[in-house]
Image (tube, rainbow, N blue to C red; front, side, top):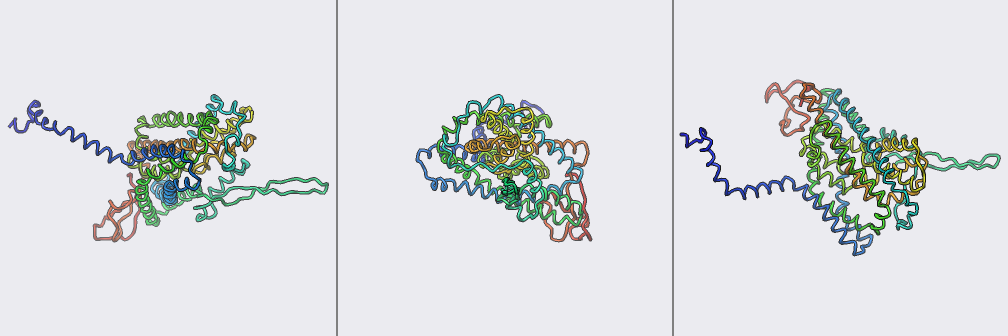
Length: 529
């Protein structure tokens, strides 16, 4: 009996494991194959980045025409179109369902923590950037730089500078769009008309009058606020709002399925985006060497903030390894690096942070769309370094008041910065106007923006992801203490409704009367997920 079961003597149990030895090679191969299957998308995405860089370097010697470069970039353009197509339903549906799934107390608590996290990290990023710019001094000795010497005559013109007060008024206007349909494809911006006044004494005065116009570009800020308020209103309705909540939840889940399909095209699109951008630059070496200190200061700020400051903040709150958390987000980071758009990275970030890192869907779909709109740590670094760089370029010694103005303006203006490529450059004009510097040197920033903007976007989305991780940890700790912070909507079953497994995780169906009987009326209940 002892020899049969092997339970009484540990030595007798060991020979039973020996026959597995010949299968060691097979098991290793199986584990390797399983690893590649699990991480296929990450490996393909990283390979796309490397292949794109190699393709761009190889094609630079062919002297491609503008038309040929446009055709080369077409697969990457298709990726951007698909990602931007999904942003509107993803942002609106995720925020409506997320806000509706949280009770008022938890919504206020999480919102307050998120605002404090976003504000403090952005302010610390701005302070770090100003300190680095004064240490490295990228503009000192570069006074001879001119657009003509760098071959920038055909580069896009710098944005029209706006008064600081008009910039903040535009921010408030976009928070409350007058037409939601129009907000889906345009945003409010102030332009100016000059009126000449002739006095009776013959004096001529010119007055710059602000005129509010609609410019092309989705008003994400206004849609975010409306979606949040609609979700809270649906929760307040009780049973009457359950059907509409279920609709937004289903819409949101269907959108995430579309995202999972798009993700498999990401490696191809990334390869052509990076390759075409490298081919497009006329004299890359001259640009990098001339503006090398500015590029180095900006990227160093991104490395310090994204590699040290943000992970330390995450560790301080969670006592967990931040790099293990970030390892599951390689695909969104590669997407951010290639597309230079926080908004375009949002779909892949939601998918990976939920599936790879186990962040609660209600938290990720509540905080990530907000973070993609208002949390711009990388942009704040880039803007502050650029402002100090231009000041040094013009031999202007910044005083304490101007430095404080840069910090506050960069932190505040990053809230309204568009999550699109080169969106941060538009807010640099606001900072320069606030401290009284000319904006004609912005062409130098635009010339190398495509280089710096890649690390800028990676730091932006990293801050959003770590913020979601911190909120998820705080919620789990609160639940363990027995406090009901996050709650879900439960609705009694109605005839022909789908099973619980087929519906959204935010809405579950219950039928107390059995599978046949139907409850006479809908009843809203709340319980901890």
